[in-house]
Structure formats: structure tokens, C-alpha cells
Length: 300
Image (cartoon, rainbow, N blue to C red; front, side):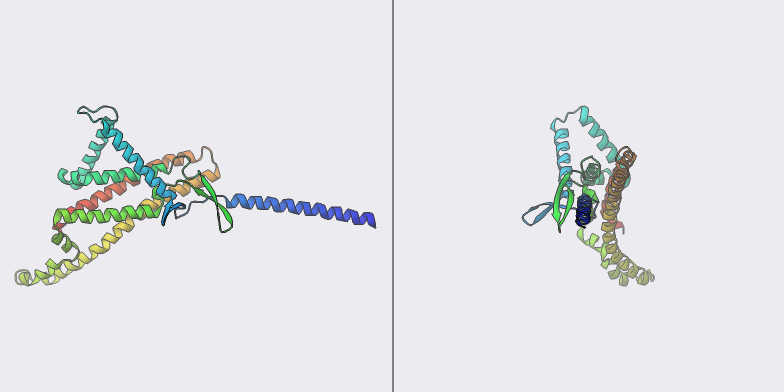
């Protein structure tokens, strides 16, 4: 009886050891899973400067601004009458971009006023789009505890993969186009684009010669009100288009890397390089169109 009891105790101890090993393995697996990272719709906070939260997408945006400033510094440092080297390349790019802008504005004078803003915006969006594709962006970071779980927080993340960035760019663009319209057309004319008081006031003077003005002019007034809704729609259109395309690319690359980390993501990275260029071009061209339309508001 005593030998049987000892054998049972040994068996129970071995069973406990096995269960303990399984639990440890499960715990290790859970820790590994918890420390993983999935692309989120929101940017993760990295640091706090007083009440100001610094996110990983904001760091990327600051990096893009620093690159633009360095480019401007090196290009403008030794400007010569006869361009050479990097100055020559930039002059070819800028000249081609201005000709493209001329085809939208129709006037070189308008292009010269809008172009510095639009071209800088294009560079900012393009660099942000491409920075998100560099190895290390999204994969270099640190672990932190959140609600008892260990999570991975990337130090950098594509700036335009954050809706806050694209929304800020869209609001800045729409407000800028309206300010530009006021400066070019004049405050009163531009105000009548949205609240067409002139159309209502003109009815008594036109009603004898043009009886249809009783119907047409109130329609013009309500069309102006619709223009206000159109300005809000511009913000939604600009911000969601850019954010949606870049965020979708981020998720696509992360999914390909999970399936097979080598070779498979490379074709998709080339695809995202093209998508980043096209999206930057679309954003800047739409901005150019909004500014051009605002500058010709007297025709409405």
C-alpha cells in the first residue's frame, strides 16, 4: 500500500510539473501576443510636454518639416545664374510644376501667388507618405504597460496615416482658399458667393424687364447657401481620401509582413510608393483648384 501511495504522489507531482510547464508556455505565448502591434486608427502618444501630447505621427510630421527645411537650405545656399547639380534638378522640377499649375489657373499671375503654398503642401504630403514606407518606421519602438497588458508602441508612424494630420491639412487648405478669395475678389463680393444678398436686392429693379428674376434670383440665393455645405464637404473629401489611402497601405504592408516577412512585401512597397506620389499630387491639385475657383468668385 505504501509503495502504491508513493507512486501516486510521484505521478501527481509530475502532473503538476507538466501543468505548470503548460501554464508557463501559455503565459509566455500570451505575453508575446500582448506585446504585438496592430495598426490603429489613432496615433499612439510618445511623450507629454506639459499638457501637450506628442504622438508618433506628429514626430514623423516634424521629421518631414525638417527635411523640407534642409532641402530649402542646401538648394538656396549657392544659387547661381547658370544652374548646376541639385539646383538644376530643382529648377527643372519647379518649372514643370508651374506649367502644370498654369493649366489649372489659366494665368501665370495667379499661379505665382498660389504656387509656393501648393508646392510646399505637395512636398509635405509626399515626404510624409514615403517616410511611412522606410524600414524601421512602425517597427522600432518600445514596450509599455497598459491596463495590465504589455503593448508595443512604435516610435514613428506615417504622418498622413493619422486622421488628425489629414484633417488639419484639409481645414488649413479650405480656410486658406477662402482667405485668398477674399484678398483677390474683395470681401463683399466673396460674401455674396455664400449669402447672395445682391440677388435678392436686385429683384425690384429687374422684375419689369426680366419677370423671371422673381424665380431665378431666390434660387441664386439658395445656391449660395449650398456653397457653405460644399466648403464643409471639401474638408471631409480632402482629409478622408488621403487618410484612407495611406492607412489602407499601412495595413496592407503589415498584413503582407505577417504572412511572409521576406520578398512578399517588396512589390506592395513599390505599389505604395506610387500611391504616395499620386495621393500627394491629387491633394495638391485639388488645393490648386479650390484656390483658383475662390479667385474667380466674381463670376458666380
